[in-house]
Image 1 (cartoon, rainbow, N blue to C red):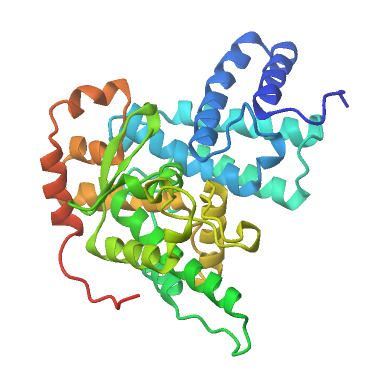
Image 2 (cartoon, rainbow, N blue to C red):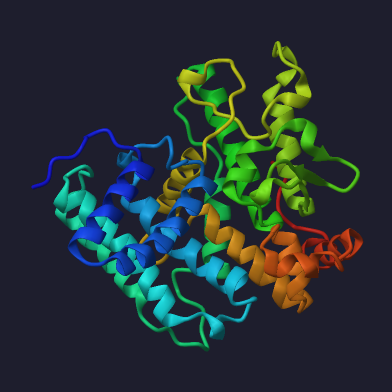
Length: 360
């Protein structure tokens, strides 16, 4: 067993792994796998786990398996121009092999990552399955939630609280706010296509009341962009914010996060959620709704659901990429020809209209 530091950051561990590959396999393998690990770096940055600061312990099975969906969407939209048939199976397999090898290195070779044998095997199987050629006529089952899955998690989030009569008032208020917040988060992600990292950075001052949307600040690529919400999502967000009574905070109202923590440790402060806490809420809701056995629901899968709905209704790939905030050099030229008004009209066509959902 080689001797390595036990408190390495992910970046440090990746560099050590690539050096290990140079010595044990070849320089070419190290370079090829390095590209795959760069995609893992980008994914971790996007979900709020910067590899330059985070230790390897944050690489839980959930984080790694979510990367499968993220990489597939990246390859389709950013590399293959939206055409799934143009995704190179060999390239995809190499990227997943790089991540699988890095995981083995952390678990087996250096023992820096403590995963139970069953968890390690499950992640390796997930990466191996993702590497196999897929039926080009169907979306991968771990990528797109069905309408039924979406409906079930919506219903679970909306389920009325069932608390004992002697529940302390403080606990009752926290649980009420958590319920309202979870409803608003799900509806906001479904109708906007935001990344979870963008959602948790939203501040009240970023909301655009005139169009029922928000200005996403410092999105991917460091660029601001406008997102729009459905009527249902907007009402859910406003109901949640009204219930918070933020006026008592000693901070400008506009600087407060739209979605905040309501755990005991937060106390009376309005503190922003972390991407990981949002993902944990999704796991809990999916578990309560009884869908964990059929589908691995994450905030990122709702982003893909949005993209699929938007693209199927508009038939406009450039407009869908604009709505998602993609900013690769390959698509920047397309965005220049896409007007914000086109996006607003298309969004209203896809997500507008009356809803029969009850008030909150």
